[in-house]
Amino acid sequence: MLSPTAIYTILISVAIVIGGIWAEDHLKILPDIASSNAPIYDELFNVLFIIGTILFVGMTALVVYSLINFRRKQGETGDGIAIEDNLPLEILWTAVPAVVVLFVGLYSYDIYERMGGMQLQSHDNSHSHHLMKSDKRIWGGIGSASNEQSSNNLPVIDVELTAMQFAFLFNYPKGEIISGELHVPLGHSISMKMESKDVIHAFWVPEFRLKQDVIPGQPTILNFTPTKAGRYPIICAELCGPYHGGMRSTVVVEEPDDYQAWFEKNAKKTELKL
Image (cartoon, rainbow, N blue to C red; front, side):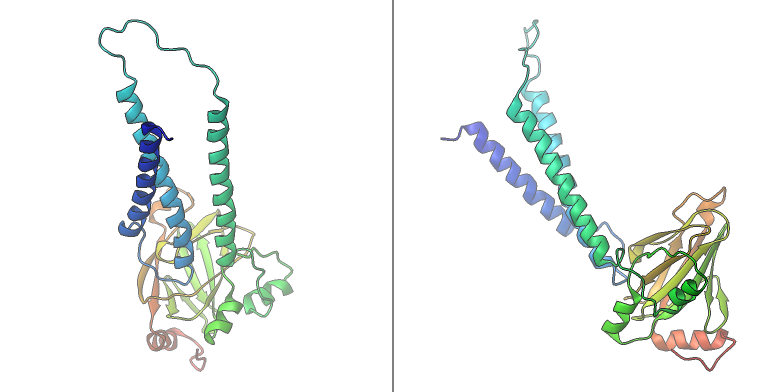
C-alpha cells in the first residue's frame, strides 16, 4: 500500500510533466519558421524545453517544500538529525541524469543528421566540384543541396559568401553579381560556399535555424531551402572585433518571379535564367 507521501509525489510529478508539455505547446518562444531545416530543429528545441521545464519546476518545488517542511521549528535549539549515506537515492540521482544526457546526445545527433550535417557534399554541386579541383578541404556544413533538388525538382542557386571585418558580401557566380544583401528565391535550394578573409565569423539567420562558422582558410558549404517570403536578419554570431555588433545583413526571400527580376536587373549576363 502506497503511503500518502508517495501518492502526493506521484501526482505532483505527473502534474509537472503535463505542465511542461503544456508550456511547450502554448508558449511561442522561437521566431518564425522560414526554412526547411527550421521544423527539424524545433523538434529538438521542444524536447529540450519540456525536459528543462520539468527539471526547473520540479527542483524549485522540491526546494520550496524543503524550506517549509524542514525549517527550524519554534523552540528548537539543537542540530538536525545526522543522516549519512542513502545508496538507492545516490543511484537514482546518478542514473536519471545519465539517462537524460544520453537521450539528449543521441537525439541531437539524429536531428543534426536529418538536417544534413553528417552528409557528404555532392560532387555534382558546382561549388564542391570547383573546390575538389583546387584540392581544398571542405567542411560539410548543414543541408544537402542534391537531396533537396531531387525532392522539389528546382535548380540549386549557387552563392559565394565572403565574410570580413565587418561585413558580409554575396557573390552570384552565374550573374557576376556582388551584393551586400542575400537575395534568394522561395522554394529553391541554396548552396552557399563561405570563406573568411580575416578572422572567424558566423552566418546566423534565426528564422532559418541555421548558424555556421565562417573560418579563414577553411571553405564551408551551407545548404538550405527558404520556405517563407520576407526579409530576415543575418547576424554574425562570433566575436570578430570591436564592431562585431554591427556586422549584420539581410536575407531577402522573394517569389521566383521577383527574384528573377532582381537577378536580371543586376546580372552582367542577363541571358542566364533560373
